[in-house]
Amino acid sequence: MKAQAGICAEPNLHAHYLFLNIVPGSHAAVTAALARLPALWRELESSYADAAFSGLVAIGNRVWDNLYPDDRPPELTAFPAQGDAAPETPADLFVQLRADRLDVAYIGVQRVMALLAGLVNVQDERQGFRYLDCRDMTGFVDGTENPQGEDRASVALLADGPFAGGSYVHVQRFHHRMNRWQKLSLSSQEAIYGRTKADNIEFASSDKAPTAHTRRTSLKDETGRSMEILRQSMPWGSATEQGLVFISCCNTPRHFTAMLESMYRKDNNGHFDHLTLFTEAKTGAAFFAPSEDWLERAGD
Image 1 (cartoon, rainbow, N blue to C red):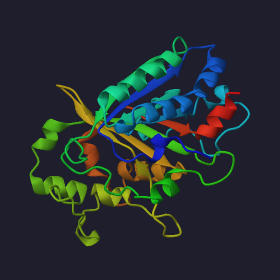
Image 2 (image 1 turned 180 degrees about the horizontal axis):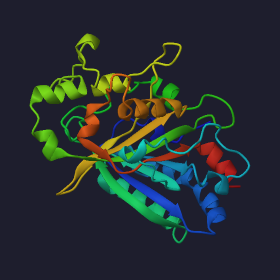
Image 3 (image 1 turned 90 degrees about the vertical axis):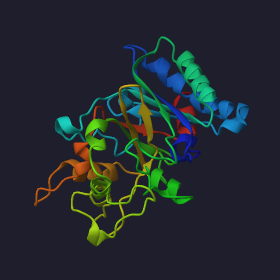
């Protein structure tokens, strides 16, 4: 099964994110339209070879059965909200368009919206961009724990079954409290992350605070194996607001759920991820991104 290239894509300079809701009564037409997206991804990738374009469409938990009533990814469930601190804000479709040329990413946006014209409404859209050397707006390198090379696919994609080549996708839009963050000393910022800022060196485990972000999100399962996800996040910003579009791709939703719970739920000693004191999750939605082959067959 050929995975959608946007799932395991290497970092790009630009991205455009669309959160779409289907117009009532349009589900059959949307299913047919989504089957044409893999060909559109391939066309754009070929036409603008210098742009490293990749496309991704993922279908929301709540609308899946309306689009594809005959089969469902076995672990597709609602977003694991953590109260108001990390809310669920469902969307029917999530589209990620990434490229090293902003104009090419936007051409992708125009083509997608033309294909879905009259069938969807835009719930939200964001433009992502590379900030310095792949850093978050807080100044720290983002995605340090990401798998590399062939490991990206093994973490992000289902290996077998009818949904092989697909991925469970969770998306959140964070708004950083930059005024509060910038008042912290460098050492305080580094303690919150659990690694150095300038040269991105992770603290030894014994030197990390129990509230450090890298401690709260570096988890192991009951067998001692690391619970990895592939992050495809990028910063976004305007004149007045800055933040991160956080995107998790994984062959199971359990890893993301465990990380989110570790960040927001206090442990027996009252510890939680102190990075959450300086950034606010405004949205949260769960999706599944099928393989290109699956999308094309399902639309026949």
